[in-house]
Amino acid sequence: MNKLLFGTAGIPIAAKGTDTASGIKAVRALGLDAMELEFVQSVNISRENAPKIKAAAEKENVVLTCHAPYYINLNAAEDAKLEASKKRLIKAAEVAGLCGGQSVAFHPGYYLGMDKDKVYEKVKRQLKMVVAELKNIGCGIWVRPETTGKRSQFGDLSEIMRLCNEINQVMPCIDYAHMHARESKNNSHEEFKEILAAVEKELGKEALKDMHIQIAGVNYSGKGELNHLTLRESDLKYEEIVRSWKEFDIAGVVISESPNIEGDALILKKMWNNA
Image (cartoon, rainbow, N blue to C red):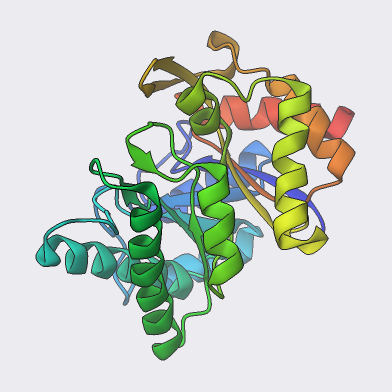
């Protein structure tokens, strides 16, 4: 991928229908380039219908990604929850792949009061199993653990970079709202450059040409993320984020998770094109 594409987390508000194909048409009509399939409650596209979604996306020249269900914890204490988490992630990745999707983003899990190094090793083992099963069924989609927004959640930037370094078919999902809310920082031009520099250092320049980014304004407390806001309602310095993207000449997909998904996606695309 050699362009930076902008899209919505789910079906645009302006879509004339509530189905996925209508959402894809709306994305193109808005002048956007991508849409994230929101499997956050459940995988709501069947394997049988996936080829229709793929055809619709190809017709409109819209890139698809997906977000796996929220109910995933690769550090779950109970074996049943652990197995259910892996099955949810595998199903989301498989169906997204059948839809022609490029990647599946997901929240990896929670620390549950455990030693962070031990949590890392457990998450790594479980994620390796997920990737092995995806390879077994012929699904080559990128698996993208995302930087998380609460201090109780596994997934700071260094942990995500380690997973990507140590497991094939795993690349990062950089969520700027989460990174800002988690530590009440990551909100300056220098810090935004440091994030991209870390990606380049750990994963190489090619990773900067295949980024998966999620962005929204964010409301937060000392414990981390509370809820999403529009970019203009928040204190997130998104102009500086776009500036850092230009300086590192990144490419890939930027997904707006704002309450005004297409409005903020269009703001970012316009800023990128005019920068």
